[in-house]
Amino acid sequence: MTTRELYPEIEPYDHGMLEVGDGHSLYYEQSGNPDGKPVVAVHGGPGGGSTASMRRYFNPEKYRIVLFDQRGCGKSRPHASEPDADLSANTTWHLVADIEMLREHLGIDKWQVFGGSWGSTLSLAYAETHTDRVTELVLRGIFTLRESELRWFYQEGASHLFPDFWETYLEPIPEEDRDDLIAAYNRRLFNPDTAIHVPAGLAWSIWEASTTSLFVDEKFVKQAAEDDFWSVAFARIENHFFFNKGWMEDGQLIRDAVKLKNIPTVIVQGRYDACTPPQTAWDLYRQMPHAKFVMVPDAGHASIEPGIRTALMNATDEFASRQ
Image 1: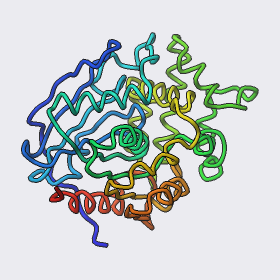
Image 2 (image 1 turned 135 degrees about the vertical axis):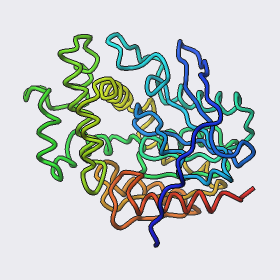
Image 3 (image 1 turned 120 degrees about the vertical axis):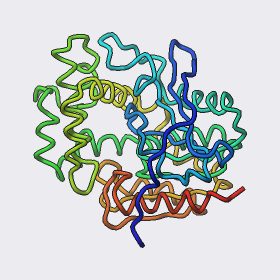
Image 4 (image 1 turned 90 degrees about the horizontal axis):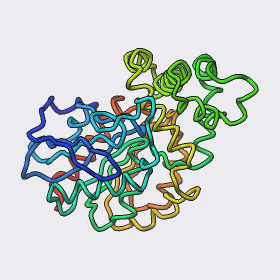
């Protein structure tokens, strides 16, 4: 497979803030062709926020590209990094409703849904709830919030691959409080004392940044280590969702994927993805045998890795002219 580069950088032709209730306002933007095929790109995390590079996985002449920042992160407000942040109205199902509200606000009848990592989780949750509004699914680095997936990355499993990075992840948590690391982090991340929640936010975010790519992305690690504002929000939102198991039954998204049998789907997975190992992607594919499954042989988790980037762009190009 010939490696592809992203489409050229583009600027939005429209952006705004959408009031979605519960005191939350979401930032959204549109780029590409206003008359093109609608696609919503769902960012990861949760809490990662959208980035300009997300626009570049789509042919800007053929796609109407919609990006938005989920509750509590990016340019959306209120921001989860605030000391007294209240995340009670930030759940999977609030976000599913937000996506649908955004579709209606933009006057879009149906759209392609594109998401990786947590973005694949939310894309599945949205598609299984609003099946008639989804033209295609492009999913990467599949994550479905099962207990086994959470324990792999935040309690045991991935630590055997990254023992040096794991030590940094453990630093804010006393040894006697490590039986349930997600719960231990939850107590610290939501402590209003900056001397407690900032170190916890940094350690949580650095762990994830250090493990996302086949080769460590030093720029991403540096961002996590130096940007308290971003790292605290990212860690708080992720931990909040994971502590509450996504407000779903264990295995719900894979179980209900049978609802998506009429939606053309591409699943892209890195063979050496340590954050969301291939087993989950394979389990999803077994429920969606109509999907195209692409196992990238030399990649980890990140969308920007050459093989993953190429597979995603091939998928969006394939769907670009589909009515």
